[in-house]
Image (tube, rainbow, N blue to C red; front, side, top):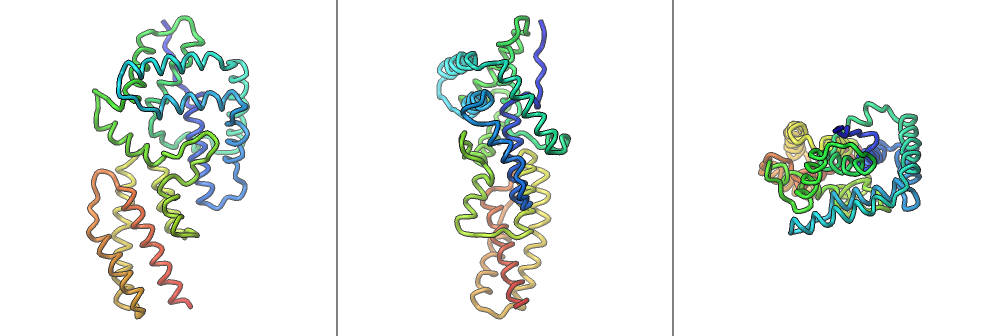
Length: 290
Protein backbone atom coordinates (compact mmCIF):
# COMPACT_ATOMS: atom_id res chain seq x y z
CA UNK A 1 0.00 0.00 0.00
CA UNK A 2 1.31 3.42 -1.00
CA UNK A 3 1.75 6.20 1.55
CA UNK A 4 0.45 9.62 0.60
CA UNK A 5 3.26 12.18 0.62
CA UNK A 6 2.24 15.60 1.87
CA UNK A 7 3.19 18.65 -0.20
CA UNK A 8 2.97 22.25 1.05
CA UNK A 9 2.82 23.35 -2.56
CA UNK A 10 -0.27 21.28 -3.30
CA UNK A 11 -2.07 21.91 -0.02
CA UNK A 12 -4.76 24.51 -0.66
CA UNK A 13 -5.13 25.43 3.02
CA UNK A 14 -1.38 25.90 3.48
CA UNK A 15 -1.01 28.00 0.32
CA UNK A 16 -3.86 30.24 1.47
CA UNK A 17 -2.28 30.76 4.90
CA UNK A 18 1.14 31.49 3.40
CA UNK A 19 -0.40 34.08 1.07
CA UNK A 20 -2.21 35.67 4.01
CA UNK A 21 1.11 35.89 5.87
CA UNK A 22 2.67 37.48 2.78
CA UNK A 23 -0.16 40.01 2.51
CA UNK A 24 0.45 41.06 6.11
CA UNK A 25 4.15 41.56 5.46
CA UNK A 26 3.38 43.59 2.34
CA UNK A 27 1.13 45.89 4.35
CA UNK A 28 3.68 46.30 7.13
CA UNK A 29 6.44 47.01 4.59
CA UNK A 30 4.29 49.51 2.72
CA UNK A 31 4.53 47.47 -0.50
CA UNK A 32 2.10 49.11 -2.92
CA UNK A 33 2.40 46.33 -5.53
CA UNK A 34 0.29 44.02 -3.32
CA UNK A 35 1.31 40.93 -5.29
CA UNK A 36 0.05 38.46 -2.69
CA UNK A 37 -3.31 40.19 -2.41
CA UNK A 38 -3.70 40.11 -6.19
CA UNK A 39 -2.83 36.42 -6.37
CA UNK A 40 -5.24 35.56 -3.58
CA UNK A 41 -8.08 37.55 -5.14
CA UNK A 42 -7.58 35.92 -8.53
CA UNK A 43 -7.25 32.30 -7.43
CA UNK A 44 -9.21 31.97 -4.19
CA UNK A 45 -12.81 32.84 -4.90
CA UNK A 46 -16.15 31.03 -5.08
CA UNK A 47 -15.87 30.62 -8.85
CA UNK A 48 -12.66 28.57 -8.75
CA UNK A 49 -12.19 24.95 -7.74
CA UNK A 50 -9.38 26.08 -5.42
CA UNK A 51 -11.81 28.45 -3.72
CA UNK A 52 -14.30 25.61 -3.26
CA UNK A 53 -11.64 23.29 -1.85
CA UNK A 54 -10.39 26.04 0.50
CA UNK A 55 -13.87 26.25 1.98
CA UNK A 56 -13.70 22.54 2.81
CA UNK A 57 -10.25 22.98 4.40
CA UNK A 58 -11.60 25.83 6.54
CA UNK A 59 -14.62 23.84 7.66
CA UNK A 60 -12.51 20.84 8.72
CA UNK A 61 -9.92 22.98 10.50
CA UNK A 62 -12.21 25.51 12.22
CA UNK A 63 -15.54 23.88 13.05
CA UNK A 64 -16.08 22.44 16.55
CA UNK A 65 -18.30 19.61 17.81
CA UNK A 66 -18.82 18.21 21.29
CA UNK A 67 -19.44 14.62 20.24
CA UNK A 68 -16.93 12.45 18.39
CA UNK A 69 -19.60 10.68 16.32
CA UNK A 70 -20.90 14.02 15.02
CA UNK A 71 -17.36 15.03 14.09
CA UNK A 72 -16.90 11.79 12.17
CA UNK A 73 -20.18 12.31 10.28
CA UNK A 74 -19.11 15.86 9.48
CA UNK A 75 -15.87 14.58 7.94
CA UNK A 76 -17.86 12.11 5.82
CA UNK A 77 -20.10 14.94 4.62
CA UNK A 78 -17.07 17.06 3.68
CA UNK A 79 -15.54 14.13 1.78
CA UNK A 80 -18.78 13.74 -0.20
CA UNK A 81 -18.66 17.46 -1.04
CA UNK A 82 -15.01 17.10 -2.10
CA UNK A 83 -16.04 14.49 -4.69
CA UNK A 84 -18.07 17.16 -6.49
CA UNK A 85 -14.96 19.22 -7.18
CA UNK A 86 -13.56 18.91 -10.71
CA UNK A 87 -10.13 17.37 -9.92
CA UNK A 88 -8.69 18.01 -13.41
CA UNK A 89 -9.67 21.66 -13.24
CA UNK A 90 -8.39 21.90 -9.65
CA UNK A 91 -5.00 20.46 -10.68
CA UNK A 92 -4.68 22.99 -13.50
CA UNK A 93 -5.63 25.87 -11.20
CA UNK A 94 -3.05 24.78 -8.62
CA UNK A 95 -0.38 24.58 -11.33
CA UNK A 96 -1.14 28.17 -12.42
CA UNK A 97 -1.25 29.36 -8.80
CA UNK A 98 2.12 27.79 -7.94
CA UNK A 99 3.66 29.19 -11.11
CA UNK A 100 2.45 32.67 -10.17
CA UNK A 101 3.82 32.36 -6.64
CA UNK A 102 7.22 31.24 -7.97
CA UNK A 103 7.31 34.22 -10.33
CA UNK A 104 6.36 36.68 -7.60
CA UNK A 105 8.35 35.61 -4.52
CA UNK A 106 11.52 33.96 -3.30
CA UNK A 107 10.03 30.49 -3.04
CA UNK A 108 12.28 29.27 -0.21
CA UNK A 109 11.45 32.31 1.89
CA UNK A 110 7.77 32.03 1.02
CA UNK A 111 7.59 28.41 2.15
CA UNK A 112 9.67 29.00 5.29
CA UNK A 113 6.84 30.70 7.20
CA UNK A 114 5.51 28.45 9.99
CA UNK A 115 2.03 26.96 9.67
CA UNK A 116 0.18 27.05 12.99
CA UNK A 117 -2.01 23.99 12.36
CA UNK A 118 0.30 22.12 10.02
CA UNK A 119 -0.60 18.63 11.28
CA UNK A 120 -4.32 19.20 10.70
CA UNK A 121 -3.76 20.77 7.28
CA UNK A 122 -1.52 17.88 6.22
CA UNK A 123 -4.13 15.39 7.43
CA UNK A 124 -6.88 17.10 5.44
CA UNK A 125 -4.67 17.06 2.34
CA UNK A 126 -4.04 13.32 2.72
CA UNK A 127 -7.68 12.30 3.16
CA UNK A 128 -8.58 14.41 0.11
CA UNK A 129 -5.77 12.81 -1.92
CA UNK A 130 -6.90 9.34 -0.87
CA UNK A 131 -10.05 9.94 -2.91
CA UNK A 132 -7.89 10.05 -6.05
CA UNK A 133 -5.88 6.90 -5.26
CA UNK A 134 -6.91 3.26 -5.23
CA UNK A 135 -3.96 1.67 -3.44
CA UNK A 136 -3.40 3.98 -0.45
CA UNK A 137 -2.27 3.13 3.08
CA UNK A 138 -5.55 2.61 4.97
CA UNK A 139 -3.93 2.98 8.39
CA UNK A 140 -2.35 6.29 7.42
CA UNK A 141 -5.67 7.71 6.22
CA UNK A 142 -7.38 6.44 9.39
CA UNK A 143 -4.80 8.24 11.54
CA UNK A 144 -5.32 11.41 9.51
CA UNK A 145 -9.07 11.24 10.08
CA UNK A 146 -8.48 10.73 13.80
CA UNK A 147 -6.26 13.83 13.89
CA UNK A 148 -9.05 15.85 12.27
CA UNK A 149 -11.64 14.42 14.67
CA UNK A 150 -9.47 15.46 17.63
CA UNK A 151 -9.22 18.95 16.20
CA UNK A 152 -12.99 19.16 15.62
CA UNK A 153 -13.80 18.15 19.20
CA UNK A 154 -10.87 20.08 20.70
CA UNK A 155 -9.24 17.03 22.21
CA UNK A 156 -5.78 15.57 21.74
CA UNK A 157 -5.09 12.59 23.95
CA UNK A 158 -1.46 12.50 22.84
CA UNK A 159 -0.56 16.08 23.72
CA UNK A 160 -3.11 18.33 25.42
CA UNK A 161 -0.60 21.18 25.67
CA UNK A 162 -0.50 21.47 21.88
CA UNK A 163 -4.27 21.88 21.76
CA UNK A 164 -4.13 24.69 24.32
CA UNK A 165 -1.52 26.44 22.20
CA UNK A 166 -3.47 25.79 19.01
CA UNK A 167 -6.60 27.36 20.50
CA UNK A 168 -4.64 30.45 21.54
CA UNK A 169 -3.15 30.76 18.07
CA UNK A 170 -6.57 30.20 16.49
CA UNK A 171 -7.82 33.31 18.28
CA UNK A 172 -5.13 35.30 16.49
CA UNK A 173 -6.50 34.21 13.10
CA UNK A 174 -10.16 34.12 13.97
CA UNK A 175 -11.32 36.42 11.19
CA UNK A 176 -10.79 33.86 8.42
CA UNK A 177 -13.78 34.22 6.04
CA UNK A 178 -13.69 33.26 2.40
CA UNK A 179 -14.26 36.76 1.06
CA UNK A 180 -12.17 38.63 3.62
CA UNK A 181 -8.39 38.90 4.02
CA UNK A 182 -6.72 38.41 7.42
CA UNK A 183 -4.33 41.21 6.60
CA UNK A 184 -3.72 42.38 10.10
CA UNK A 185 -5.27 39.72 12.31
CA UNK A 186 -7.26 40.32 15.48
CA UNK A 187 -4.44 42.12 17.27
CA UNK A 188 -3.82 44.71 14.58
CA UNK A 189 -7.52 45.25 13.92
CA UNK A 190 -8.09 45.92 17.62
CA UNK A 191 -5.14 48.28 17.81
CA UNK A 192 -6.17 50.23 14.71
CA UNK A 193 -9.57 51.05 16.20
CA UNK A 194 -7.81 53.53 18.47
CA UNK A 195 -4.59 54.24 16.60
CA UNK A 196 -3.74 55.24 13.06
CA UNK A 197 -0.39 55.09 11.28
CA UNK A 198 2.12 52.57 12.61
CA UNK A 199 5.71 53.65 13.23
CA UNK A 200 8.71 51.49 12.37
CA UNK A 201 9.08 50.03 15.88
CA UNK A 202 5.44 48.93 15.86
CA UNK A 203 5.81 47.40 12.40
CA UNK A 204 8.92 45.49 13.50
CA UNK A 205 7.12 44.13 16.55
CA UNK A 206 4.19 42.94 14.43
CA UNK A 207 6.50 41.37 11.84
CA UNK A 208 8.14 39.30 14.57
CA UNK A 209 4.76 38.42 16.07
CA UNK A 210 3.36 37.29 12.72
CA UNK A 211 6.47 35.47 11.47
CA UNK A 212 6.91 33.61 14.75
CA UNK A 213 3.26 32.93 15.54
CA UNK A 214 4.05 29.25 16.10
CA UNK A 215 7.59 29.77 17.43
CA UNK A 216 6.67 31.19 20.82
CA UNK A 217 10.14 30.89 22.36
CA UNK A 218 11.79 32.97 19.63
CA UNK A 219 9.19 35.73 19.88
CA UNK A 220 9.38 35.67 23.67
CA UNK A 221 13.15 36.24 23.48
CA UNK A 222 12.66 39.14 21.06
CA UNK A 223 9.86 40.65 23.15
CA UNK A 224 11.86 40.41 26.40
CA UNK A 225 14.80 42.27 24.85
CA UNK A 226 12.53 44.97 23.43
CA UNK A 227 10.75 45.30 26.78
CA UNK A 228 14.01 46.10 28.58
CA UNK A 229 14.95 48.73 26.00
CA UNK A 230 11.51 50.34 26.03
CA UNK A 231 11.36 50.59 29.83
CA UNK A 232 14.85 52.15 29.88
CA UNK A 233 13.82 54.72 27.26
CA UNK A 234 10.57 55.57 29.06
CA UNK A 235 12.26 55.96 32.45
CA UNK A 236 14.87 58.24 30.89
CA UNK A 237 12.17 60.32 29.17
CA UNK A 238 10.13 60.58 32.39
CA UNK A 239 13.07 62.36 34.09
CA UNK A 240 13.35 65.03 31.42
CA UNK A 241 9.83 65.58 30.08
CA UNK A 242 8.01 68.64 31.45
CA UNK A 243 4.49 68.21 30.10
CA UNK A 244 2.32 66.92 32.98
CA UNK A 245 -0.10 64.90 30.82
CA UNK A 246 2.75 63.15 29.07
CA UNK A 247 4.47 62.45 32.40
CA UNK A 248 1.29 60.75 33.66
CA UNK A 249 1.11 58.63 30.49
CA UNK A 250 4.74 57.71 30.90
CA UNK A 251 4.37 56.70 34.53
CA UNK A 252 1.30 54.55 33.84
CA UNK A 253 2.93 52.85 30.86
CA UNK A 254 6.14 52.17 32.79
CA UNK A 255 4.16 50.62 35.66
CA UNK A 256 2.17 48.38 33.31
CA UNK A 257 5.30 47.18 31.51
CA UNK A 258 7.26 46.58 34.72
CA UNK A 259 4.45 44.52 36.25
CA UNK A 260 4.01 42.41 33.12
CA UNK A 261 4.86 38.78 33.80
CA UNK A 262 5.76 36.94 30.63
CA UNK A 263 4.55 33.36 30.69
CA UNK A 264 5.29 30.60 28.20
CA UNK A 265 3.54 32.68 25.55
CA UNK A 266 3.56 36.46 25.16
CA UNK A 267 -0.10 37.51 25.34
CA UNK A 268 -1.97 39.76 22.91
CA UNK A 269 -2.44 42.28 25.75
CA UNK A 270 1.33 42.42 26.30
CA UNK A 271 1.94 43.00 22.61
CA UNK A 272 -0.70 45.74 22.59
CA UNK A 273 0.94 47.37 25.66
CA UNK A 274 4.25 47.38 23.81
CA UNK A 275 2.58 48.92 20.75
CA UNK A 276 1.23 51.72 22.93
CA UNK A 277 4.66 52.20 24.53
CA UNK A 278 6.23 52.57 21.09
CA UNK A 279 3.58 55.14 20.19
CA UNK A 280 4.33 57.08 23.36
CA UNK A 281 8.06 57.08 22.63
CA UNK A 282 7.30 58.42 19.15
CA UNK A 283 5.03 61.06 20.65
CA UNK A 284 7.85 62.23 22.97
CA UNK A 285 10.29 62.27 20.07
CA UNK A 286 7.92 64.44 18.03
CA UNK A 287 7.53 66.90 20.92
CA UNK A 288 11.31 67.24 21.30
CA UNK A 289 11.76 67.81 17.58
CA UNK A 290 9.01 70.44 17.33
